[in-house]
Image (cartoon, rainbow over all chains, first blue to last red):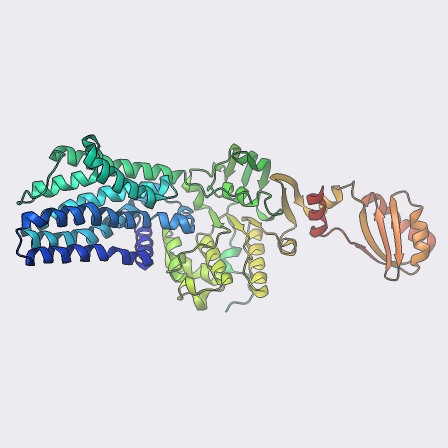
Amino acid sequence: MNPTVAWITLRGLIGRRRFLLLFPLPVLLIVLAVVGRTSGVRYENWGVPVIDGIGFTVMLPVIALIVGTGVLGSEIDDGTITHILAKPLPRSEIVLAKLAVAFGVTLVATAVPMFVAGVITHSVRLGVACAVACALGALGYSAVFLALSLLTRRPVLVGLLYVLLWESLLGNLLTGTRILSIHQYVLTVANELGDSKLLTTHVGWPAALIMSGVFVAGGTILSIDRLRSFAVAGETS
Amino acid sequence: MNTVEAPPAGAARAVTAKTVELVNVSRWYGNVVAVNDVTMTLGPGVTGLLGPNGAGKTTLLHMMSGFLPPSQGQLTVGGAPAWRNPEVYRDLGLVSERESVHGFLTAREFVTASARMHRLPQPEQAARRAIELVEMTPAQDRRIETFSKGMRQRTRVAAALVHDPSVLLLDEPFNGMDPRQRLHMMDLLHSMGGAGRTVLFSSHILEEVEQVSGTVQVMVAGRLAASGDYRTIRRLMTHRPHVFVIRSTDDRRLSVALIAEESVNGVDLDASGLTVRAGDYGTFTRALPRIALREGIRVRALVPSDESLESVFSYLVSA
């Protein structure tokens, strides 16, 4: 990992206006958890919609999408990536620096509010479980969305399709698609580590870990390979 | 601020000569051929890359800088392929046409980051030297997004020079610069070429190319139309009459004598003097002193009026 690339990436990410998009969903999550807790209703009745429905299904992938496509996709869009690529750096160093920043920012933006929401919902142990699950999800989603930045010119759209169509819609209709869903791995980890058994899981513990590794490794290797062959947009001038 | 007269220390330092070599290089996008079977060798010194819009200059520069693979042919920088080879950037500096820079960084941060990514032993010193070269020291601690176009351009040039590359590729480097900055940049390119670096720059402003470099590569419709010193290229265009403006002690009598000369295609006589169109450059320039001597006429001025880069370029483009 190259620290200079990571530093430029982080500065660029924090300096962009889209960084502000990271705040509303975590705030909403915590507010809903507080509302549920203070409503007097048992946590089994509102915990799942808050922790899974808002936290794992919406907040985690959306924030990972904003950050994951922002660390590289924005530089590709505005052309600043050529300044980094015109250096004698192995492309793996560049990709790992981008991945580390995407993972780190996503982790902070999601694990902290999920920990708070877990504690408010049930217990500190559930909070820790949700935070660890967020870490796993942040890594998997970041690797996938980073790769999407190099595979398509519309990474945000394709990423949204993955989250909304594949994970949410098809994940509910076709059970077979769940094995290729980061959301399901996150649920499994949160449920295994937590003490509430609040969440419904469809993927086993070993499969969740192995498939997360496959997503991370696959996305990273694909990104490195694509970056090695990065060509500027076709021009005829 | 540094004076233009003082040659920059970094630029004057001699380097190992490296060449950029293209052999039968073509690049196409679907059915559109952007670069068509180009073979050229760029050696130490400054070379201008010329061509009308859509001639393939930028595509050619993208291929040379490793940002586009040739569809066909071989392209090497210092003997190594440019495509999929980041090591090539150890000795290559690039200033692309697109003005994109990390605007949230200051000029010093931007150039120092470039030095760090090149793994230079003393990145801060290298950055300071490069910033001095482009006369950006007074503004180095301002964010790049607050810069004018010319200042951004100079900052990008500093980042491209920070590792003292043997090969420097610049796409429209004078864009946005004021006349004084242009002169300074021309001086810088001159000194870099003089120190043995291979410098290629593209421009659509012929005067700039004429002032910076005698050697040109002219692209027309994706093909390499001409290569070399533009004055030599002009003389090789034997199908185009060479135009001379002559002033003498007796223009009228000289015009009569010249029209009888076989190498002369036509003569115009007006108040400013004689305009002669000669079919053969060498024969005419040898015959003129002989004729003047024979007629007892003194030639006061002989100026080739279409040997400018502009004439050469317009002939090549219209051919």
